[in-house]
Length: 451
Ligand code: MG
Image 1 (cartoon, rainbow, N blue to C red):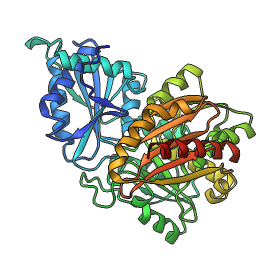
Image 2: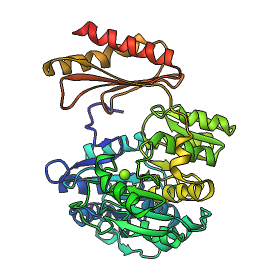
Image 3: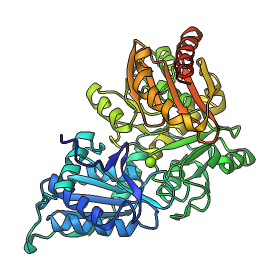
């Protein structure tokens, strides 16, 4: 497709700062573009939004564009992202739209699109939407065919019931859940309580200013949750991002669960064929090997995971970030179902701390090379262009955060400039210490050669 068409979509939908990047005109154009794309007149679109201050404004703007092109809108209100994917599927809609900027700060918002199967739009579909927006080739309806709006308050109950049918939880665990005042705030605690857990809540009052903590479920943002888990003697802590398609866990000792190990644990209990990204640790392969399962790797990004799950008929898939897909339920990543799955495992097999400690760690090296701040850009440009050629088994190179080179055997190296100090950082994982050292030496030599 035409390279000149400006990109609107990033790795997870459209994101931007309100007013300066995400303008009302653009939002309305996107509404017309998606309605045009799915065939216009008479098609059905479900829309939900997270807790951001701009949620209704964006919903109204995109809805105006959709109605103009003759599609009908089913409003879900303030719901987690996975409910939009589920509702698109359940209500037989032609498209699901979630208005969210996920874990970004308050001043951002965004738009994420879902197919009628509950699967995220692929890059090809997103490029087509960008083309329609760029060319303004909208198929607008005449006055007598303007779309209609209806509200749906029932599908949430189907969602909750179906979630609970998907797991076998007796309900004897004490759980602390922290929703960051985001889209999971109402539903996640309700689901956990209905599962029978003893639930304590933290930041479960919806608030687009995210007063309790920022919506990114990072170690730094979850210190309070960790303390509460420990202080209350809870079995587990659950934290969602701003739209609850992700979750991370805190173990019974108040430690944040290692992302890779948690993914490995759940993968091995589900078994069969599991899909994960190139940046996930070997511990996933090791745990799957132990249960006679198979691991398939994809590029980073939940839609890539979803595509490969469908292609390979896998039983589960996820990224180490805590974005997990449960294909038996829906093809949309679901942080609430992921939480239920972890709770089910902890209930059956014992304390989370013990389960995670049993999972092996692989040689990881964190190295750094001193450089002037002014040299960082040049170094990173050279790394991007030339370093991949220094390795002969490269599977994938991505530039999401620095330069990450993934090898065919699963080893990987990430090169990125420190944001605060005068260093270039090298982080890597090797299958053996020898491989790890080799990757470290090659990366070091290359960067030192530029200096
Ligand atoms: Mg998210």
